Image 1: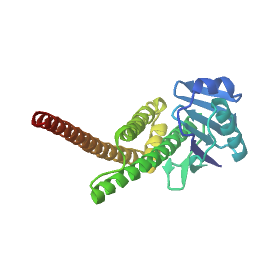
Image 2: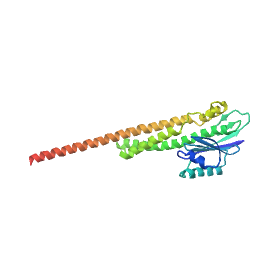
Image 3: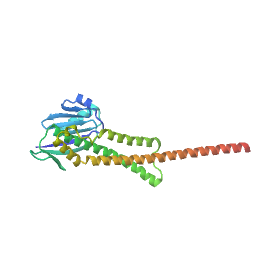
Image 4: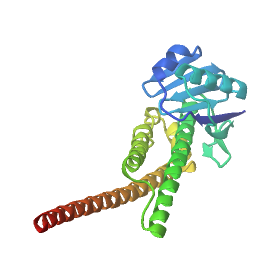
Length: 260
């Protein structure tokens, strides 16, 4: 038996309470951070509050209908989605094995599906935030090149502060949404599920990609702090020159007043 799992990221946090009250599928698990719905035998989909939706053994047409429903419920914009796909093959008595192009398990149930969907959800969310971070990194690098070539950069004042706020908000969203180091509760007392989770986490490079993401955000923040300091120094220098000019004008006024 072979089924496909595919995850999408909708680009922002999802109101699970509103989704749960609106979707008509059978909800088999719910907590404040995730919902699991069953649509048939060996078919589930999971919705995560940090924006990922993962389908396990569900045909494309129904996937599209479900995503359209969630977008309509939450008034989300229609845009291109990050996605990640993998196949699950069930072979009786086979050891758990996570390969590059498929996952081999010896049985399928909602707990196995949950572990697979969780890792796919985290992976596709990482892809989304890595893309967002790379955009900021490229823009920051552009200002660095400007500084090297011209001795100044084009972003200043309020625009610079808004740009710093954008970077900080992205970092805060990642910290709030990607709790990827927490193993799900169902793995604590089940060695099979724990092995599956560990292998998936390793194969998808979850921890490595997360560390790389954090390093990129740190680089952006360090650069922006330097830009802010340079901008403040430039602003202070401008104020000093204005004061000097005003004092010079006042001295000239006094001098000419006494002379004439």
